[in-house]
Amino acid sequence: MRSPARIVSAPASIAVLPFVNMSSDKESDYFSDGITEELINALAHVKGLRVTSRTAVFALRGKNLGIRELGEELKVGTLLEGSVRREGNALRITAQLIGVSDGYHL
Image 1 (cartoon, rainbow, N blue to C red):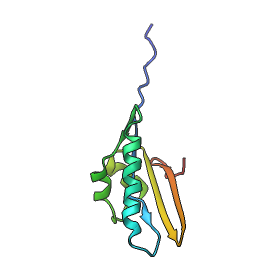
Image 2 (cartoon, one colour; image 1 turned 60 degrees about the vertical axis):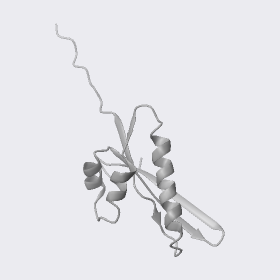
Image 3 (tube, one colour; image 1 turned 120 degrees about the horizontal axis):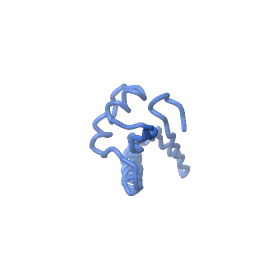
């Protein structure tokens, strides 16, 4: 009798895409990039999670690629995307976790 096949899942992988500055203030670009870098660094400390490098994700900035294309290019199963809006003293940061296989929010 053969033993059942062992299912080995691929390690969890994520790319944090550069957060988009939705403000009219271009100085917020620096802040948006900082959020992206902080998230990459924080996630890199999660055991068992592969995190795409800052260099790789920032190299794709401004390219018009879909979710699946980004996932294939970065070799990840999950994308984290977000935006920053600053208006006066108000600051709004949004983030979405998206599965590459189907493009749906997780």
